Length: 220
View 1 (spheres, rainbow, N blue to C red):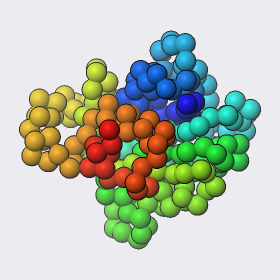
View 2 (view 1 turned 180 degrees about the vertical axis):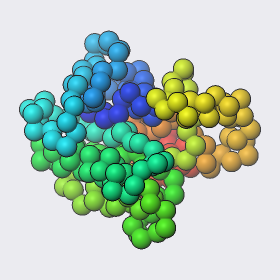
View 3 (view 1 turned 90 degrees about the vertical axis):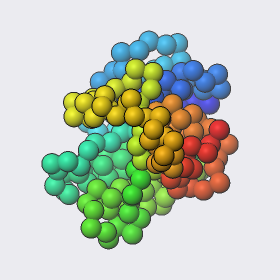
């Protein structure tokens, strides 16, 4: 299986990349980001691409893949809706539309978030934008699309968020992870589980196309 991965330097993307590199059935991984991951593996290939509003310059390198794992995302804190939509909806759709033209037989997996608003009409700005993004992705002519909506994600294996505030929060929360997992298992997952779930969905599909946190954890 050949995979394209967006967002490989982010917290979730790092976890997904780790699982892809460990999985024997993943033949190759192509990461696309503004910077390289810093890793060197035989099956890892990387493209540093600065302009996420236009992928035409690298389109020749994007065909022939079985799945795309889209883990690119930003926090909405301090952003206007227009800014957040540009970073979330516009970039995702530009990438997805490019891939849909090149590889319509591809399976597209998008890391969204718990609380996403599929109606696009709720009061929470980020949830509306995520819902709009999910709905638009479902309209593209891929083989299949899956939206993953994790809640609290515990980073594993030394993985850290690039955001300073989040790193501090995770440092505080880490010792409490077993407690949260015991008390609220429906709302807690890990970078490892998200990565493994995405690979398995790409291989075998899933019983539903919108997967909440507990659905992600149930995939083995």
